[in-house]
Length: 239
Image 1 (cartoon, one colour):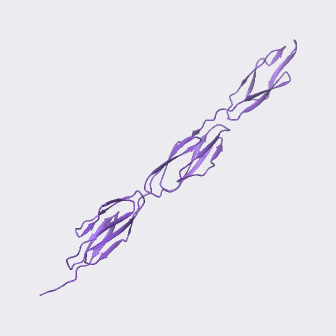
Image 2: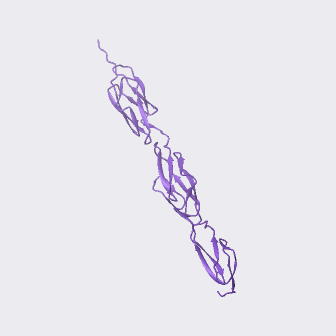
Image 3: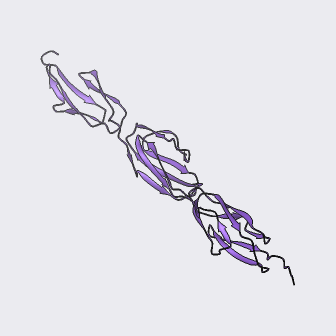
């Protein structure tokens, strides 16, 4: 400008500070300082300098993300959980899951801080399982205990005539459940193995009853009593 001309710099943007002096004479320059952008969103502001508009653009801060926790443990049943996500205003984040037994209930994409909500389905086996999925680019680990083992026998017992006979029992249980067979009598032979895992069959042989007396015993199968009775042989007489 010409010698003797007075000018100043002013701004209405709170994040722009005009450094002293605010009033100038003759040609010259002015200085300003910018506050750190607390968001990920770019912004612009203006300064009026000698009745002219000077535009300042500031980029957004780099996005960073933090989870309230990086893992969770669940029981065998259906359970729902939420994970807090902290980030800057304007930051976009996603939830990516490939586990069939984990369902994402919240939106797959979100902006700003928020929560990711998911549900674990009931574990149909006795085996513990683990999985991971991504929240805002951070790995989140999930573990789930196995279901409690239960056992059912079919049939629940058997009766036989005096002759040698083969029998079998079906044991139904969950995958991962272990069970065994115990036998305390010599006239029944259980086909190996005696220790099992998962559902299966128990096969056994009842020896011929060489007396006229009926007999009974109990096999212990998968924590259940399996009752076996056998008739005595018919009486025969000779002189």
